[in-house]
Image (cartoon, rainbow, N blue to C red; front, side, top):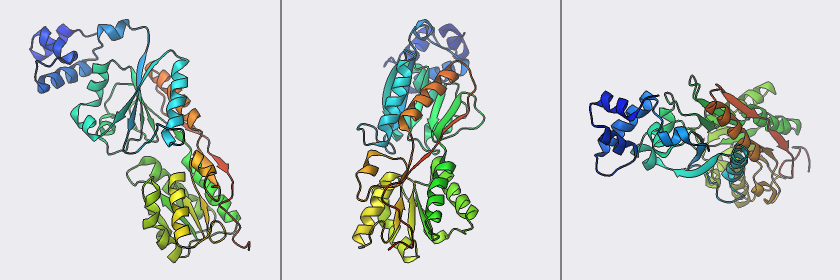
Length: 334
């Protein structure tokens, strides 16, 4: 195990300067501090405090532009609670940290983890273009991602719900009810899970003998307002049903259809994804695909435990469950 002295010798600076860099002292330059941290990470340094700690310290980073988590009706809430339950059974100390672009550009991921003494992390709401995600190719920090995947690094794992299965449930249900002109309103384009759901929609349409109409497939964002930009075009191009990549998108779709004086499901059927509490509160109640968010969080803790112990886990996918409610209807029903 490398020591502070080893880092000092590598850099050709005083041991006291290395100590200041590792402990966040204010009387050295930012450039020197970052150099010390980067070198410590590269050499596999762990502080004496970390080596002697009896409680594992982990964190949940939440990209606050893309993930809400503070109340029970928000997508991330139950995931964080599930992770905390899994952590509690392992006597871990968990810190939840909102992240943003400024934080990611201010300090590298590995050096942040070292400086704060974290043994591992669970990342929620990040996209493939975020700075920290790009740095994960070379990280040695045990890290679990929700709905993102970094190939080739044995320190990284991925948890999620089987998007292919979930979207398949939605398409098969609508086709069985006589629908062929099925639209798909996806989430944000720079997201691995959005791309997976897009490919799943195209695949299951074709497996049902229906060639998808490109005018009925669109990327939006995981917010209700994106419906305004796409629903009118879907209706103009003959859609009789709309599959949405989230319940929040579906809520916006229903609102937009109401503004267009179209009734759900009498005029058009709508399916969501996630089974958030809002799905059961909408009028009509939303047919959707359930992701068990508590189990996602607990699975993330299970995977992180394995990664911390040196087990090279890759992917853990939960089963998707179809939840029929009132927002879909047979096409020939009057």
